[in-house]
Length: 281
Ligand code: APR
Image (cartoon, rainbow, N blue to C red; front, side):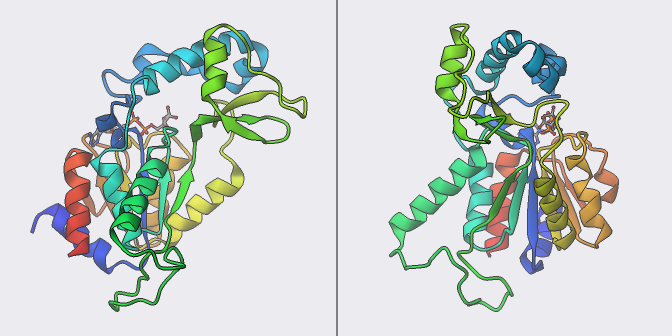
C-alpha cells in the first residue's frame, strides 16, 4: 500500500473531508504559480498591488493589474484533471468543502462542468442537489453540494468598495488596457478587483468559516500550496490540532510537512484523479 492508498483509506472513512488548494493545482492549466522559478513574484512585486496603491495611484495600480491579469490568465485556461477530480469527489458526497487561495475561478468552473456532465448522463431528479439519505452506510450523504470558499476572492470579478456590488472584470480590464480607469458605481463608489489586496484583511466571516471547517474536518488535504501565506497557511495546523488526518500533496516541501500524517510528492494531475478513484472504490 503506497501513501496515496493510505490517504484514500483515511478519506474514505472520514466523516468530514476538507480540501485546501493553492496555485499548484492550477499550474497544469497554465496559470503561473507565485513562488516557483518562473513564478509571478519573479516578474512582479507585491508592492505594485497593495490596497494603499489602489487608493493613492489608481492609474499605476490598474496599469500593472492589467499586466498581471495577462500574465496569470492570458491564455484560455481550463480546469484540469485535478480540479475535476475534486469536483467529482464533491458530487460523490466525499468532500465537505474546498478552501482555495486561488483567484482563477477554476474550482467553480470544474464543479459546474462535472455537475452538467452528471445531469446529462443521469435522469435529473428533483432536489438532486439536496442531501439524500445515506444509501451505502458510510455516514455521508450523496449529491450534496461542496462549499467553495475563495479565501483571496476571484480575479474574474470587480467589486464596488462602497456598496459591494460585483461585476465581471473583463470590460474593466479592457478599459484599463486603454488607460481608462474603471467607471464609478451607480452609488458613486469605485470598483476594485474582487480579491484580497496586500494590506487588506481576509473577510472575517470567510476566515472564521475556514477555520471552523478545518477544526471540524476528520481529513484535511492541503494541495498545491507552499503554505507560507498566513492566515490560510495555518489551517493544516488547525486541522491537526483536532486530530484530523492531514495529507499534503505538493511537489516541494512545506512548513506544515511536520504536522502531516501523509506527505505525497506527486503532480496534482496524477495524484488527485487516482485519489478520487481510490476513494470511490
Ligand atoms: N503538482 C503539485 N504541486 C505543484 C504543482 C503541480 N503540478 N505545480 C506547483 N506545485 C507546488 C509548488 O511546489 C509550490 O510549493 O505548488 C506550490 C505553489 O506555491 P505558491 O506559488 O507559493 O502558491 P500559493 O501557495 O498558492 O501562494 C499563496 O501567496 O502571494 C500570495 O495571493 C498569493 O494566493 C497566493 C498565496
